Amino acid sequence: MSNRWKKIIAWSVVVLLVFTGAALVIKRKKALSRAEPPRVLPAVVDLIKVVRRPVRLTLPAMGIVSSDTSARISTKVSGRVTKVLKKEGSPVKRGEILATIDNVDLKTKKRNLLLKGANLDYEIESKEAALASLEIALANAKATHARTKELLDVKGASIEEFQAEETRIASIEAQVKATENALEALKNSKQMVLEDIKNIDNLLTYTIIKSPVNGTCAEKNINEG
Image (cartoon, rainbow, N blue to C red; front, side):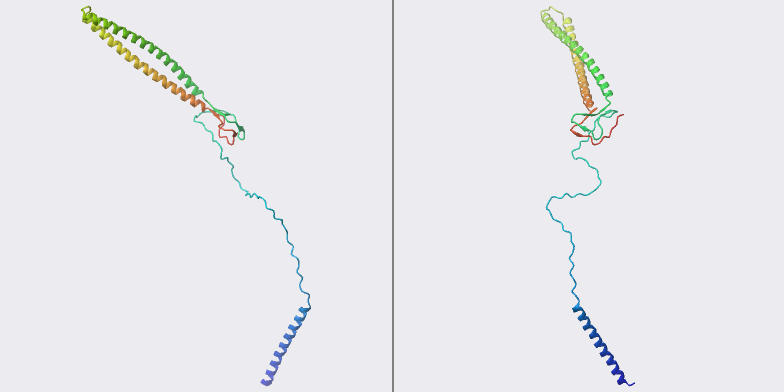
């Protein structure tokens, strides 16, 4: 077969394919033109009516709730707890007793101080009486000495008697001074005893634990014993 016929056959095949493709395209367009257009299906949606109102937002979590107005109660006195009168969760009133601490030692010290104070009072009273007697004796000695001086001036008394009275006056004055010092020391001791009693009375108030406010016992960290 010559090259001429080969070319004719090739071009014939190409033309046939072109016409076949065109026919298929035309047929497809006609089919599409006769087909019904796709229906638009309605969309199904949920409707919510919007209402304006306050909304509380919460976040679940674990934690410990504590009051910002809580009062932690403690005491200055250490010792054995004799009573605990409130439990956790119990309501309390201001001034109500919550617990007590053993105060036997403090009361014993106070009794001893009271006894010491009574003895000091007796000693002070005795010293004051002695001082009063010495002051009277000193006044009498000075009065006698003044008369002796007058007699001495007119030769009615001896110089020895006059000097003896001076010595006695000096001795009494020394006794007065010593008694005054002793009396001052006793009074200072009594004042110290009174201060100690006052301090013990103050400590005794801490052996009775009271609520400073109205509220609820949230936590208890002590037990009897």
